[in-house]
Image 1 (cartoon, helix red, strand yellow):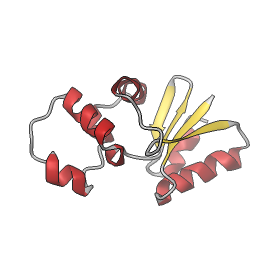
Image 2 (cartoon, rainbow, N blue to C red):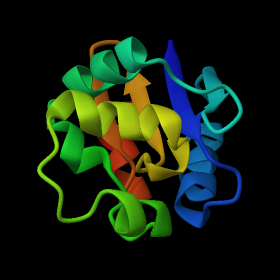
Image 3 (cartoon, one colour):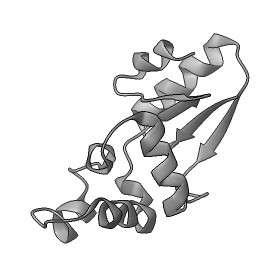
Image 4 (cartoon, rainbow, N blue to C red):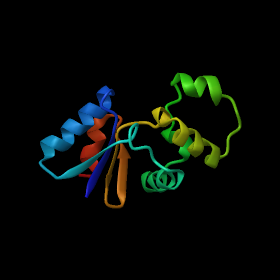
Length: 113
């Protein structure tokens, strides 16, 4: 099953959703700002993406700049920051089985569907 972690207010996320809709494949949409991820779920997602937690952070968000930028944070602290402030999570994220990508640019989604 394909899953997209989606923020409807984000242009790139909407473009990613459109790519999935156009593919004709069935998929599940998780609006992660409403259905917040647990630390364990976020860790699993990061592992599937094959990236470091810091690579999933939206570093230009005011929340990041005001509270976390410039601090020496552990991976667990970075994950907790994203759990507490899901707006910090880069989007969209698309998972298909054991493969996942951050849809930036959205066309990257085509690599795994």
